Amino acid sequence: MKLKNIIKVSLLTMGVALTACGDDVENFDNKVYVQAAEKTSTVLLKSTVPTGEATLQVAMARPMEEDVTVTFKADPSKVSVYNTFYGATAEALPEGHYSIANPEVSIKAGGVTSDDVTVNFTGLNTLDSEQIYVLPVTIEKASIGVLESGATMYYVFKGAALINTVPNLTKNLVWVQWDNPAVASDLRKLTAEALVRVEKFGKMLTSVMGIEGYFLIRIGDAGIPENQLQLATRNGNLSNADLVIPTNEWTHIALTYDADNGGEVVIYINGKEMLRDKKDCGGINWAQTRTDEGNGFWIGHSYNRERWLEGNICEVRVWNRVLSKDEINSKDHFYEVNPQSDGLVSYWRFNEGAGTSILDHTGNGNNATAVEAITWNAVELPAKN
Image 1 (cartoon, rainbow, N blue to C red):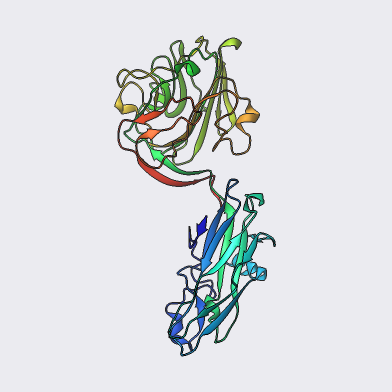
Image 2 (image 1 turned 45 degrees about the vertical axis):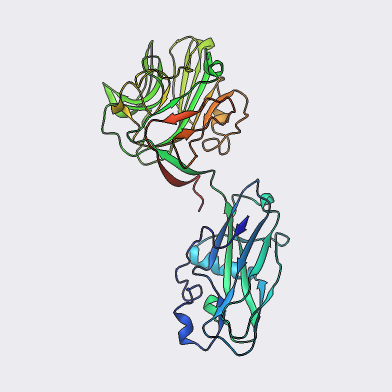
């Protein structure tokens, strides 16, 4: 993974300590500095990526008649500068996780930039993804003066977001081609989940997932508020005033159903139980491919096009078992699960970032398709400070 100024975080001015050097050099004697528009570069920690590499160069304003030599070193003491500016609690990247392959470089006579300095990172997958680490790499010495305001590059290490892109389903609708219908037929035990961010309601019904007139998770209805979650079934509906879905907030919805326990339904909002009731509907067959826009299993649609979900959706899952409250609230469950998890029969992450095809990550082959072109939005979930 080669990292050269990726996902940069501007330190703005940090007094003058981290100011970009382009304008400063004219006010000083010819001095060397790290050549970079920003003086930080973020390295995202992922369990599957143990190593990384970054490169940097030094430069000066005017060429010299002789070679200029510059030596770099890691300087953990400068982490305090980063923390002071951000009000952060970053730790120094531990020794053993980095090395500078060629700490001494030259700017050749007549030139103004050096060859690359290469910094190698190892064991990144063993670091705590909840902690922020910083490695300051600074100019230790040079054969001419050093511009202190541009002498250091700060490499920032933090856990990668689990979700980086999501679709906006406003005025859109997604259907499933059930090439393997057996996995979602006659579900006597069922858990359905989705992570949504509704931008606004403003209409009577907003659809989440399911089949109209059969077993459908939706928001709003005649006689209840437009922002109140509801399970609509062939044997009547379930809802209550605790099932409020906020706007412009990421909200995890989980619904469990157990036909073998009298049709018990439990609904969770952000992991908190908000409804427990019974509605016996027998085994649920969600494996129905649409025949037109009013039939079959849909995501973000039911009955007609006036019932779209205005906002974002991702992490849509169907299980053939009842998840416990502890499972729903387990670490990072809202944002990601193992596609091979016990009982997971359909898993549409909605993280493609392009196109209209949505992969079923379970390997069961029940992929989904958006009817209209999708607008993809960049996100960072869960958010990392």
